[in-house]
Image (cartoon, rainbow, N blue to C red):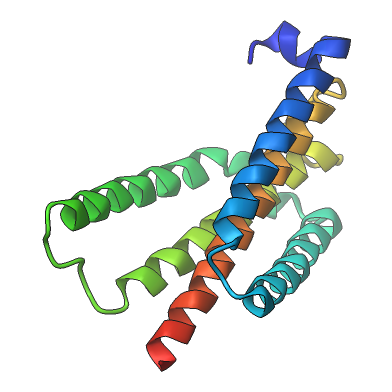
Length: 171
């Protein structure tokens, strides 16, 4: 979305509504494949994790640990993660044995860590502060909401997959 479109009054609310509806439907379809207790447990774990990351980000007063400067590093780690995920997916599609026995658990754990890092980064961009090098513009609150919403959904999905993989290994 371009800069003016992102900040224009009525349009941004329409885009946010459409995005939220479709994202909600996708998450609902995804969670339908898991037991309800596991989904509730993953949601509660996600809520605790989001609360912890948010408190740590907002309470951070040390400019040495300014998360707004770590966007490129988080993006680099995300790129490596996506590349490995694509290689893993192609291997599965073409019938190769999918890595190590605990590959799925490792991938989900790394994914949850990356989602938490993005959540901290986006939260620090929104909250700002006197020591923050970068800040989100005050008219970008819809963009900020979408960024944080995506981070929380990604964290939830990875936690749910970790719980499912752990349950599967017990059975």
